Length: 318
Image 1 (cartoon, rainbow, N blue to C red):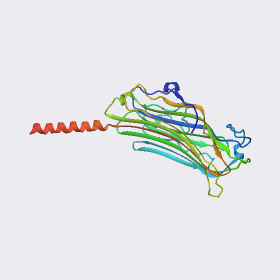
Image 2: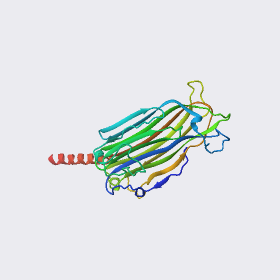
Image 3: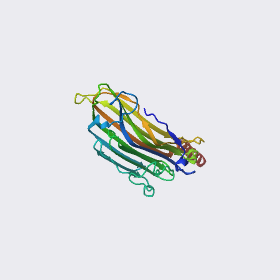
Image 4: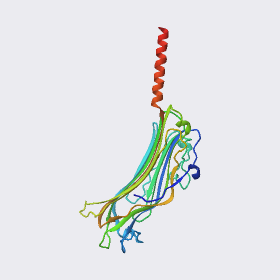
C-alpha cells in the first residue's frame, strides 16, 4: 500500500469551473515522475532508509516490453491507439478524441496536465478524450509516465461517453546483491493527481433523465520470482494506489470535491527480497465515464399515460 497524504481542493482553487446549468463530466489525470526502485540494506544494515546507491548496480533488466493504449467513445463515434516499445523505451500512444466538440477543445498531443492547467474539467462540451505517455527506467530512477481521460456531456438524451488510457510495463530482471542477507526493496514516485466526477443540479433534479459520472485512477506493481531459468528469487512485492469518485444523481449540498495531489511523494512499503530472477509488472490507468439516458421510471410512466389515453379515446368512440 502507498503511504501519502492526499490534498483535497475545490475546483475553483485549481482554476476549474463547471456551468451552473449544464450536464455531466468526469476527469482523471494520473502523472508520475521520478518513478524508481529503492533498496535498503544493499550497503550496511537494513534501517528503513533508502541507500544512496546506483540501483542498476544490483538490478539488471534482461527483457520485457512496454505497452500504452488510448480509447475514446461518444455514442457511435470512437477513436483509439496503441503503441508497444521495449521495456525501458518510450511508448507514446496518440491522443484519442471522440464527439462533436473535439475540434474546438484545443487538445494537443501530450498537452493535457494538472501543472499546465489544461484539463477541461467542464460540462460545457460533448466529447471523450484520452492520452498517455511513458518513458525512462524505474531501475535507473528516471521513469516518467501519465494517463489521462476525460468525458463530458453538455446536453442530449440517451448519450454515453467514455475514455480510458493505460500503461502496462512488464520487465524481466535479475537481482544480485553483494551482501548475504535479504535486502529491502520499494517503489517511490512524485505524483500529480486530479480525479473529479460531476452532475449539475438541473440534471440531478430532472426525474426524466438518469445521469452517471465516474472517474478512476490506478497505479500498481508486482514483483514476482521468475523460475523460467531455474533461478527464481526469494520474496515478493506488491503495491497499489487507487482513487475514484462517483457523482450522485440527486440534489445535495455536499457535492464531492476534486481529489488532488500536486507533486506529492508516494512510497510503497518495504519488501524483503533475495538474489535471483524476477518479473516486475507496473500498471497505470485512467478512466472516465458519463451518461445521460431516459429514466426507466419516467419511460414506464409515459407508456402508462399513453395507454390510458388510448383506452379513453377508444371508449369515447364506442
